[in-house]
Length: 107
Image 1 (cartoon, helix red, strand yellow):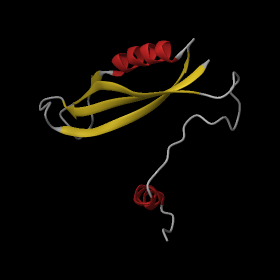
Image 2 (image 1 turned 30 degrees about the horizontal axis):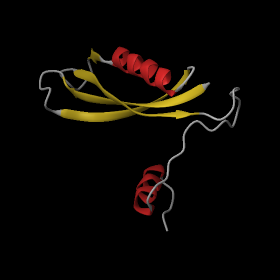
Image 3 (image 1 turned 120 degrees about the horizontal axis):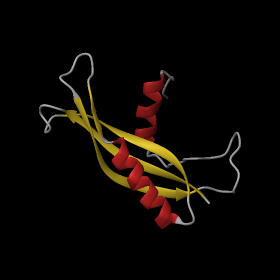
Image 4 (image 1 turned 135 degrees about the horizontal axis):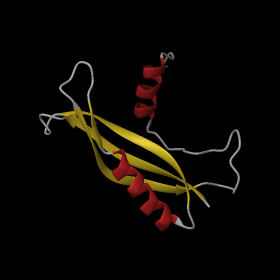
């Protein structure tokens, strides 16, 4: 079966770990026998994503894996163009904030 998993990663200043720079919600595609196995695979992927790197204007960034936020089973066994990988319900205010970020005119 196919699954999508949401990995939450926190990026902090490498020299000041309490200083949060940003968070990342990474959606990954997984093949697993069941949701529990998909969760375990996602956790390993999240741990492997943890790393340190240098940005041009920072002292350095530390990426910390925080959690597997969610795991969703995907419909069907084959993936093709148009296969839905992720959907979420949004409150009207959240949708308007997202639209503003795209440059779309918000009513």
